[in-house]
Image (cartoon, rainbow, N blue to C red; front, side, top):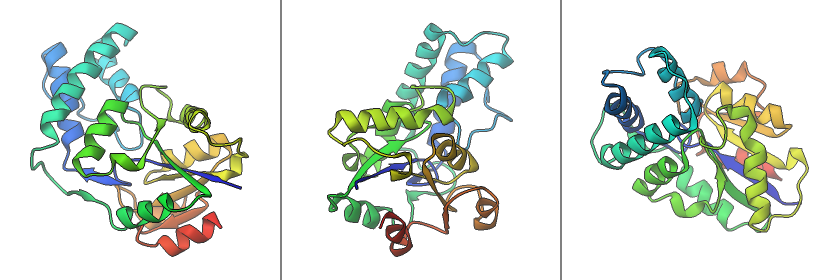
Length: 228
């Protein structure tokens, strides 16, 4: 039976030195004229759509489709520049990621895709910067739904369109670095793998209902045992 492995991006595959935060703050300033529009808004593990919804609510406006598209375009334009800046904090591919992706790509029983809160264009900008975009032929993105828990069906449908046969829920594995990723997997009946390469410790992630918790993806033997 084939497995569908869905990877989160920020904190799981890469860290971007705050490029996404800077680009989204700039987009909010472009549209509303206010600095630091994301101050105090939770970011980790959430979709870009949900984050922007909170930011727009602060200025007393509804986030309709037109405004969402305006903000999305401004964000993507800014991110294309900010991704090349040194930034603050770590900016790197997480430990073990390239090696694991290479191994999974060589297996006929595994299909690799994305499940991320990033808008699709933002996902591409981030992963292209680190030379990782080519590993992923499809996925579910932050423009598909505001609620991250709704994203697994989008990812499964797109994998099916790419030729993956029908899957049982337990043949889908969601890999992420936050409790939101675990909840997303649980909502779809999928397997959750949590990695402590973002803002949560191994101990914090063990308090979730994750099926497997790893310090990072260099523990690929343990990860592959789960697949088998």
